Length: 205
Image (cartoon, rainbow, N blue to C red; front, side, top):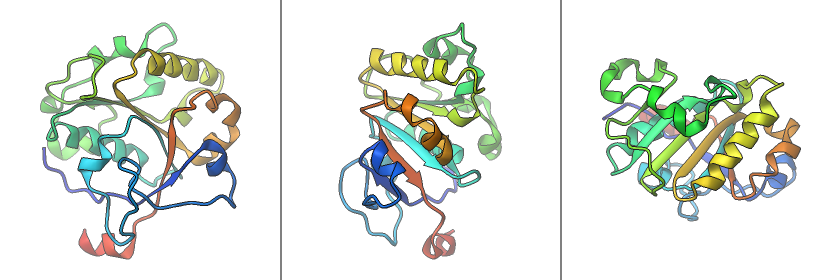
């Protein structure tokens, strides 16, 4: 499904400690292939949809949720299945995978309103532990403070149980810093920060 979207520049951090340390070395790279990127051009979607585990980090309003939605939209055109929903929609009694049935299909939503929707999945979405499935968990920072540790444990259990799928989680930057002790359990996750648009991207749009 086509959409008009500017791919943001990303800064990849090799570890949680590197993200937290303001003096740490930061490299603008294609996280998903490991290649350095031309800083004047966006990363291609064929690279974006092949990561296994990542936190997408940024300040309020920088486009984290939109970024995840676009990943799901593009997944359907690249031989993959994708789903996105706010992680705080799941009650403590419901597992992540059991929630998937409640999420609407892309085909049931108006294309012009997709970025106003908080949750949707590709039309061919079938839950299975394969490399073709991308699960985007949005807005970890909006989880109630009393439920945060429990939700993180639920995500970790889900992540450990399904090793073949891709899991991408969005969260505000200061939550990563303030919750670093809890987030250290996600040892196989990359930390990727969404950057502001460049002049080149604005001109292209």
